[in-house]
Image (cartoon, rainbow, N blue to C red; front, side, top):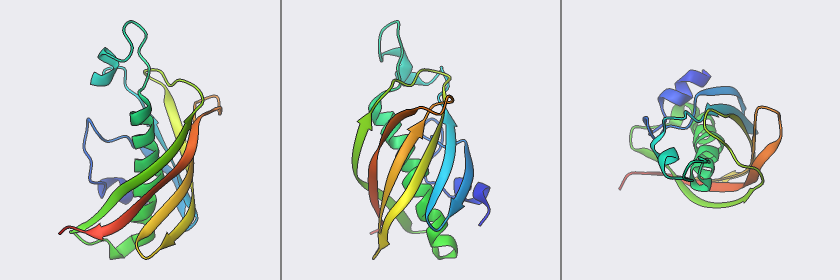
Length: 145
């Protein structure tokens, strides 16, 4: 599967799309990047005069790249129009701040994919290759009701 096809199938658009590029995907994991543009609205109020990317946005970025993109890859041609990949849980450790205009790389390793449930170990690294956050994301693949 072409990696750009995966991005095109994501159920997100700007300003809530946190995937710029996918670098690698196979049945065991996926790697992708995102650059946090300084003009994103949440920087206006988080934190005053010292903007930092909110943890919930870092978690969402890891889930979009590490779980949803991987789920689309694993489904390959079985992805139907009414398929939904739903985020169900996360356990994330935040280690370093991520600032505006910073490019991050998310590396995800599949730990479990069975009966429509997907669980992954994820790590987000800054451009220096230092871990900024890491943890576990999980979700399920279902159809719209």
